[in-house]
Image 1 (cartoon, rainbow, N blue to C red):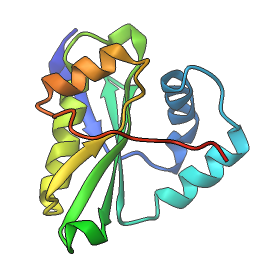
Image 2 (image 1 turned 120 degrees about the horizontal axis):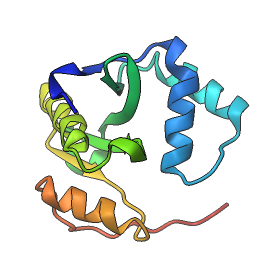
Image 3 (image 1 turned 180 degrees about the horizontal axis):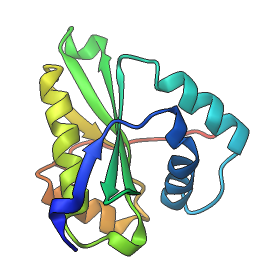
Length: 147
C-alpha cells in the first residue's frame, strides 16, 4: 500500500451509505438502515460530534468518531469519547487504525479535552490490544443494561 495515497477527511451527507457499511462491519451485522440514516444526518450537524473518514485513493476504507462532552464529574473540562473506529478488514494491520486514532486524539486536544475515552467490547480482543498500543489505560469498567 502506498500510504501517500491515504487521506483523512470529514465525511459529508453523501458518505452515509459507505459509512453504514463500515459501521455494520464494526458491529458484526446489519443495523436498522433507516434509523442509522436519521442518526447520521442528525449527528453530522452536531458541533460536539466529529466524524472522520479514511480514504485510500478514492475508496473510503475507514471511519472514526469522537464525541466531546462536558461532564459534571470532570468539572467543566471537556472529555472526548471515541464512539466508532474501524478500518475495513482488507486494510487492517497496516497502521491505518493508528492514523485514524491519531486524528481523533488531535481533535480531542484541539477541544482541550482532559482525557480521551473509548469503550471496547471484551469480545474484541484485537481492538483491546490496539487501544493499549495507542497508549490508553484499561482503568474503568463499563456496565450495560439492555432496556
